[in-house]
Image (cartoon, rainbow, N blue to C red; front, top):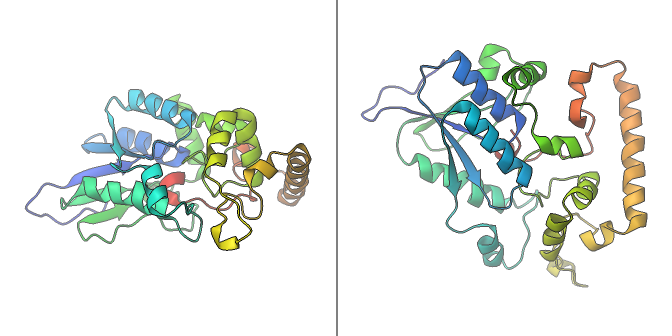
Length: 277
């Protein structure tokens, strides 16, 4: 595996967990295949995560036998929400990712030479978080070891950790419960599974006749409208129809490729990698 060149300070090895399946599987894989590496495990906590995420991380921590360091931004989501004048984060302005995930991680790293382990699989053609800081080198063990989606599923199953529990009710990735990358069907499932968190998310929204002063999580549909029975029914129907079309197109794929709706829920856009992996 590539290493950071020798420097005055010892090299630190850091694996950032998100509460998602890929980073969890990577932590398990590294512990099993490279036990000689003194790994640091960190989690950038926005304090607005799903309860299942916190519970899952506790299970992972027990399995690893080593603490997962919780990096809490001194100023959490509510602080920055106020700083931005009530402007909600969005795919076009991801201030939550920068201020609550990336910056806390870089502050924790400091100026030490670091190898950062990223859980991008061998079957994925995308790039994970790579810091511009010259002292951080990103490596991709799954790509080096040829571990794909099925391999990740096997690692989680054999370890006994299993998949993150939020996948059971249809959330496709970890991260804040009000993540703007959620698809409409995921908002419906949040309402049905965690109505208190749905209500909290709705309180952040502001609507106005002036488009420049309206801030909603779902473009064109405030959560107070989305929750109406007729809209819930329409969202569920569209989702069911889309899933039926995708199943027909994909043919006889194995269960491992569709488990949890992970591959079939293409209605959901890609979340930020540091939240999703």
